Image 1 (cartoon, rainbow, N blue to C red):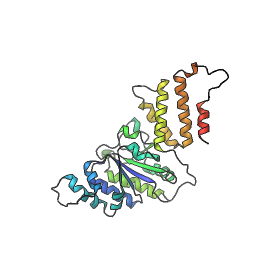
Image 2 (cartoon, rainbow, N blue to C red):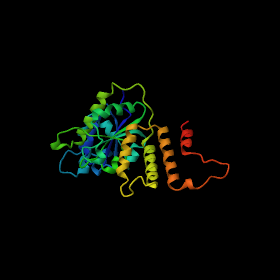
Image 3 (cartoon, rainbow, N blue to C red):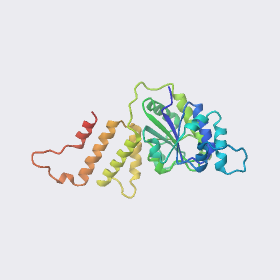
Image 4 (cartoon, helix red, strand yellow):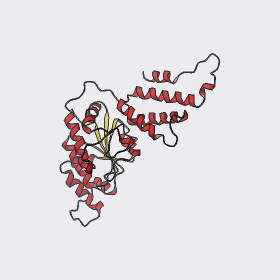
Length: 281
C-alpha cells in the first residue's frame, strides 16, 4: 500500500542537518510529504536552495543548504517539495487523523502508545484520508498547546536513563513501523472528519460545558485533554462531528436559560439532535 497520504510535520525545527536527515528517513520508508511549522532561520535558508559552502567558518544560515542536502543524500527531492506553514493547525487542517509524538511524562501525555501499536490505525486511516505524524522541536518536543491539535500520541520506548531521541532518529523509527505495517490493512476504512472540523467541535463543546459549570474555568484543559483522547480514539466521521456540535448547541441553549422561554403558541422548538440528523443526509 502507498504511504502517500501520510504527512510528516516538523514543528519549529531548528537544525538544517536534522531536516535533511528527516527527508532521507522518509524516502527510505516510502514517505514524501514533509511540512514544517515556523522553521528556524537556518532551516528556511536550507529550503531556499541557496549556496552550499563547505567551510565551517561561515554563518549557520549560509552553511544550512549544504548540511541539509548532504544529510538528505538522495532525498533532496523531498526537501525541494517541502512546504512551510504558519501554525500547526494550518499544517494539519485537512487531516482526518493527527498523531503527535512525545517522550515526556505528564497527565496530558499519559495515553501515549508505542508506534508499533498506533501504526496499523494510522496506515488504515491513510487509505482514504490525509494523516499527519507530528514531531516537536529538537530541544523540548511538542508543547501542551501543540498537543491540542493531536488526536492520538506516540511515545517511542527507550532506556529510562536517556529517553530523548534525535529528531531524525524518531522520524525513522515511526516511519519504519508504518512501512512494516503497510502490507496488512483492514478491508473497510471510513472517511474521517478533517482536523479543523474536529477542532471547531471541541471548541464548541468546551464553550458549552463551561456554560453549565462542568469545566473548571481556571483550567478547562484538565478535562478537555481527556475528551480529546476519547474523540481521538473514536476517529470521528463528519456525521459524528455534527451530532456532537448539535449536543453542544443544546447544552448552551439549556445553560443560558433558553428552556425558560416558552415557544410561541402552536409552535415547537426544533431540537439540535434533529438538526444534526438532517445534516447527515
